[in-house]
Length: 350
Image (tube, rainbow, N blue to C red; front, side, top):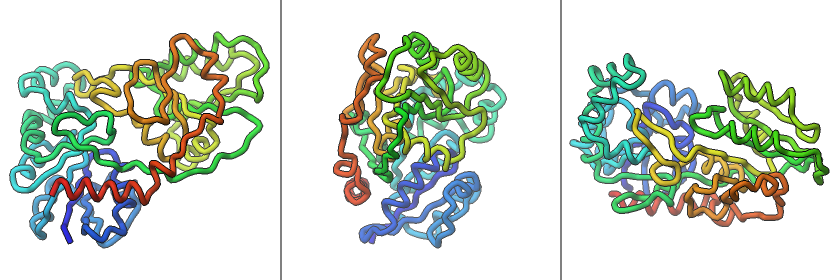
C-alpha cells in the first residue's frame, strides 16, 4: 500500500475532515495526517494516524517514514518550510487562489506594504514569504477543488460529497445565504436592495431569508436597518456572533435553496482573484454537502449542474424558485463515488 502524508497547519479544516472521511476505508493507501493545534481542535479525531504538529516539527515527523506523496492542504504561511518539503518529497499542493501561485517575488514584496503590514512583515522575515513562488514551482502537482478550474497542469481533487439529503418540510419558504456576512466576499448591498424592492404580494408560503454567518460592522447595520423597514411578507434571521456548527447545519437543512450573491472579484494578499476563474466559492462545497440547489450571479462560471445563474434584474425568479427543480446529489456526489474518484486522483500523483 502506498503511503501519503497530509499536512494542514493553517486553515481549511473542513477540507481535511472530508479527505479523512473519504479515505478512512481505503485499501490502496495508508494516510497519516499532520495538523496544527488549531486544525486538530476542529477535526476532533484522536486516531492513531492523526498527529499534532507545528511548523518546527513537521520535517522531523515526515522523516520517520517513507512517504510516496506529501499533500499540503494550504500554502498561506510557512513558505520556507513548504519550500523545503517540495525539495525533499514528491509534493502535491492544494491551491485555493490560482493567481497567487503565479505572483512574482517582486510583486509579493510590494504587497507587503499595501495592507496588514505588521503581519506581512512577519511572514517575510520569519517565514520567508518571498519563497512562495518556489513552493508552487517545486510541487510536482497542483490540485484544485473545483473541476471548473482545471486547466493545463492543474488536477481536480474531489473532496466534496453529499452528507445530508433531508429536507425539513416547512410551511415557510426558506432562502439561506451561507457564509460570513462581508461585503468584500458577497454583495449584501444588492441582496438588501432586491429584498427592499419586493412589493407586498402573496407567495405560496411565507418568505424567510437567513443570513447564515456572523455579521458585524457596516453589514450588520445594513441588516438591522432593513429589518426595521422590510416588507411585511418577509421575515429575516441574522447572527451577530459566530454561528455554531449545529445551528449552521440546522438552517442549511431547512433551506429550500441557497442564494450565493458572491462578488465577481476578491483578493488574496492584495492580489486579484476571480471567483469561478481563479478561485472557488466555498458555497459550492456547502451546496454539495447539504444537497441544495444554489443560485449564483449571472457571470459566475461553473460546470456544476446544481448551480443556477441568476438572470439579470430578475428578482422575481429568485423568490419564486420552484423546489421541483431538483438535482440528484447522491448520484453524482455520493461518498462511495467521490471516494473512488479521489483514489484515482491520488494514483495519478504517485
